[in-house]
Image 1 (cartoon, rainbow, N blue to C red):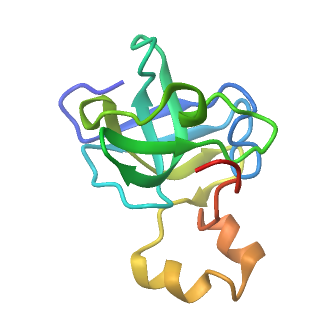
Image 2 (image 1 turned 180 degrees about the vertical axis):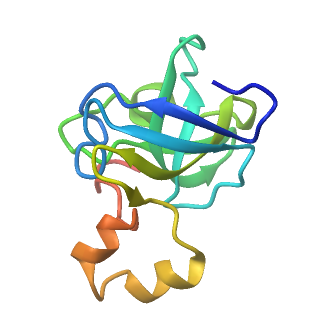
Amino acid sequence: MRYGTPFGVADIAGPSMRRLLSDGDRVLVRYGARLRPGAIALFRHPLRQDLLVVKRAAERRPGGWWMLSDNPLVRTDSREYGAVPDELVLGRVLLRLSPRPAWLAPGRRVERALRGRAPRFAERLGVSVPFDGEL
């Protein structure tokens, strides 16, 4: 939770980000951080605003961010509820704290350098392409 600091910790529940994050993982969030396509975001569910959700920001669309699950078997994302308005986006997930620490928010240059060249290493750093379902 956020109490006057730009950082917070969130626990992952469910399989929607399974390629990168698993049920029970703990992540560090930077509240108010700017998103860019490919970033992992923490936001309030558009239809149940008491529920916090972690998904990959696929792209900007009219009305907000199009958020997608990394797990192709899970469709509870923007394909179900549409674009997430900016006011519901809380921040960007920076790193997985436990059980296996991993940086999940590399800089733009690192993302560009790794994308397509070292896919396994890139995925460990949070550089991965979301499921190519309906965008």
